[in-house]
Amino acid sequence: MHIYLDNAATTPLDSEVIDVMVATMQNEFGNPSSIHSHGRQAKTIVEKARKTIANLLHASPAEIFFTSGGTEADNMAIVRSIEAYGITQAITSPLEHHAVLHTLEELAKNGKIHLDLLQVDKGGNVDLVQLEELLAKNPRSLVSLMHANNEIGNLTDIKRVSELCQQYNAIFHSDTVQTMGHYPHNLSELKIDFITGAGHKFHGPKGVGFLYINANNKIRPLIFGGAQERNMRGGTENVYGIVGLAKALEIAYRDMEEHQSYIQGLKSYMIEELRKAIPSVEFNGNIEPTQSLYTVLNVSLPCTDMSDMLLFNLDIAGISASGGSACSSGSEIGSHVLRSINTDSDRPSVRFSFSKQNTKEEIDKVVAKLKEICEHN
Image 1 (cartoon, helix red, strand yellow):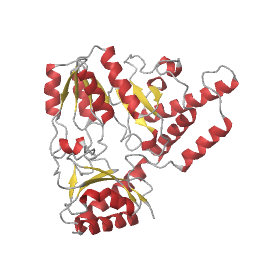
Image 2 (tube, one colour):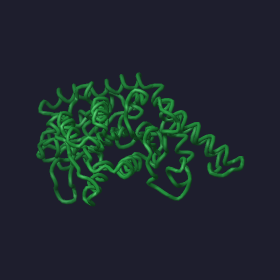
Image 3 (cartoon, helix red, strand yellow):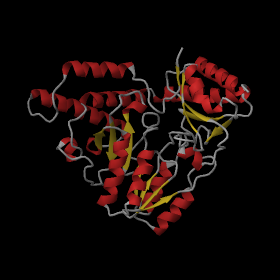
């Protein structure tokens, strides 16, 4: 029996998503840029998907731009907003996904911006007092802070961040890849310039995502070569992926309350069972339900002679998870997130991330295996 607990990396396709994608593949092959009937039909399908996503997010269809995924969307928002508004100061945290952190570091390295990294505490919480201090000194900055951390699950109060950015006339971009489809995003109420989504994080297809650009923002394309996406992204649209993305988000919103309650239950159950099975277990990041993404649990285990092979031993047992260490050894550079919150580098860490397809029986088997590994000397 194989147990998949790496849903923060990617999720299995929902059967309803497969059905709508297959039907589209079988019946629609036109290029949306073609003016004949086949092209017009494909264009209609793409625009229907755009409208579905916009309605779910309480945005305008004209504010949704399809991309190849979250990384491209983050790059487009950051690079082009800095260029469009002549921004010289950017603020982020050391916990950001590399799609954000590496992009901003590259811009800083090339002298385009000065980059400030916010302090984070041991629990992985970003210092919003420091954010306001930095904005007071440099009001027209770009602020890029993710809604939920992909490794430790910490949630950032993006409503509070948006209020600070409004107060100081800053541009606010949030990588919402991990929370899209898991929490509601009402963009008619949340004042934000850019957010991002990736289909494969909520049981949709890989290779497709979107960037929300608030209508008040005017930026240039990141990818040139065609007039697609209203002149904002060159390249023939991934029609099948876009259809799957929209269907997956539709399902996610339809079943969100039920799935949130169920998955939070799995996470809480695993925390409880781990504490009973391994008394010295610790958890990286904030695990309070109101402060933590309910799909992610980062576990710090006691060091044993099997610690270096933790993920390998889980994999051999048919358990898929992901991990990282705060230290560096050889080609394993470790997790920049765990290093930033000063986790004990002698203790192995593993991230378990859940979906609607996981069960308590699977959690029991994983906990039993972890107990066995930790007791091995």
